Length: 597
Figure 1 (cartoon, rainbow, N blue to C red):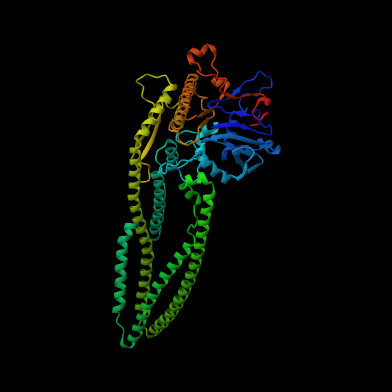
Figure 2: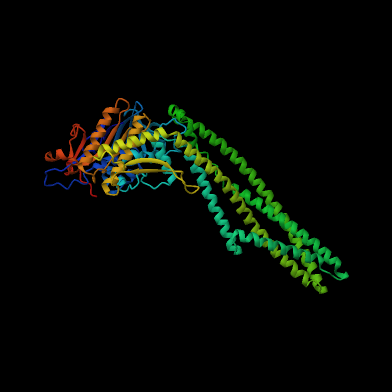
């Protein structure tokens, strides 16, 4: 849980002490004549500061804007204290030093970290899942934290409850993140992602080859297969014609020599093309990735990493060094092979040149006898047709190889889709718990008929294209379509995931921050929601404590005395739950000054 946000450079209007349960960041109108209006007093900036302290990219970009130059010029810093899994931690950041962050268990022993290094450490602390069936790949700390910390910009642009990101992920990545947070198995989904990406790459490569064949021949693949038979038959006819050409006796010797040379030229040409292809393969192999993803391997040893820190990474770096040595030896071998192949090609080319010279001499002699015009024309036509077939055959072979790979991958995709469906079937208890919790959250805020069933959360199987996910997530609230109802859908989905993680004691962040989400809702719904969360906290805090941090402006949440009968009343001390009160005069704004927007 969050404990304290403060600065030893006196940049904030006050230190912020966080509490278990509800935490309200409150914006109030003052009676001052200098009042500038309640927007811009620092409610959302406070949320962004928390995100900044947890290395959020968008918040860092925000505080790098020129209107916040005073943070750097005046050398301000910020500390955040938080607790996770029974341990206390502190992060310190200097606004004029974005690349270096200080981190430790107390302010006296803070160590210096580079950003990427600390991201890995924080990921291990806040997302230390040990379940090898429910995990996420790589260091996705920033992406996952976007679920737990959302500012007003992020909330306003959010149209889909499952898309809580500042970027637009593909459907499979989005499903992996949501499954991980909900507690469903993700291993089959991750396999599906890898295979479907490879399938799409081969699909694109196949289309490229088919388009090339069409452009070169004017035929589709199947049309060309028929046309190829005709071309091959034509080649046979030309070869037979050359063999049966009738020369006078004086030309027989020249004819036999010429046919032998032509045969040798054909053999050497095949050898030349074969050796050239081998050389091409050698050169392409230089470009293959030789990286060892130590971060991905670290994920497998998450438990070890939690106990031994980055020591495991040093061992992996030794493996990486060993692999580099192997790669260096492999490169030397490839260079040696490339050199030998180049020498072979030079020899073949020299031999071909000599054969062509001999062929040219024989052709000249036959022309002198006036007997070879027919043979020459036939031979040139034969060479042209054979070359055409050989070139297109290579494309056709590649197309057939791609098709075979795609057939095989379609089988694997079907098997992985079946695995995902089986995983969902085995997780029906969790799915029903989520459905029940979603309904509880939703109907705690709404007053509807007992028979009203139009709001629900659902996870159901779905058929579609080969690379489509085999399920869909449905989230519906009554009268969905109005702006307030869409916000209701987002809040209910977030709380479902968050409270489910708390109830099941999952090792995830135990705070959830919403900024500007209640602005379009009625007072009654807001009162009902906050009362529900307060009751839920009283129910669960002994199991696992949590914090719900939310921003409100005075006009959004204050209930006039004469309307309490209509809107209801808070069943907790509202003023006690305010962790900071910001007003619309500079000295009572977050940074004790008016920040020009």
